[in-house]
Image (cartoon, rainbow, N blue to C red; front, side, top):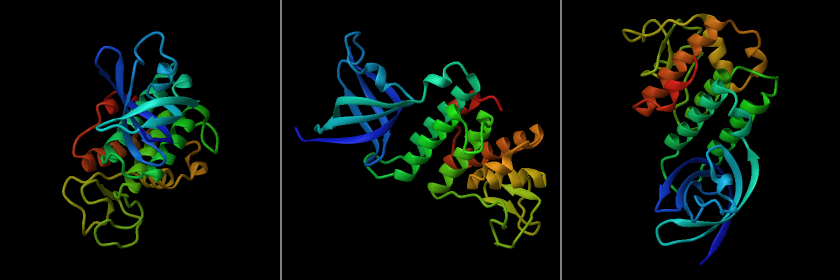
Length: 246
């Protein structure tokens, strides 16, 4: 059978038969990939532990009729190891994996930006950002906003999402696309503080220096708006997000 190699992050796994698993991954070259790992549930498996969620791996596939088959696996980064003893970081990481799975729906379609963003976000959870450590929820919020932007759902935090007038604005509407002016504001829109709008913009753009010494109330409000924006554009919530300590 023809073979090929790729790098990937394991998103989730499912049991298949008595000893196999179906592995769902986000890969560098082929986007989302589903492949069979034969015999990995046996204690004698050579690479079963490398095919768990959070694993960043280099692997070889053999092309199959319906699903490709994993034939070789080399571990690049075990992102899950530093997270297992840190509940906030672990649940934030689970939400990242589920988001990546949802935002890259087509198997085999290239999604290199989503892949690179996920790898960077998981690394930041365990090692800190370019400007030092940040709370897991803040790293998650940055990942969610940037992943949505890559998928075509970029929120606006400075211009009115409906008419484009330059802010600052005082209202936020997930359905409209972010900040809205008073003329365009739908009923029931949130009214975040100016500091929250500034934080959301910094998280979307990856300006980590701006996120230093953020007040807890501001970070909590930003998380709430990020979750609302994500849920609106995914049409339904993430199962893992309810476990994240906001």
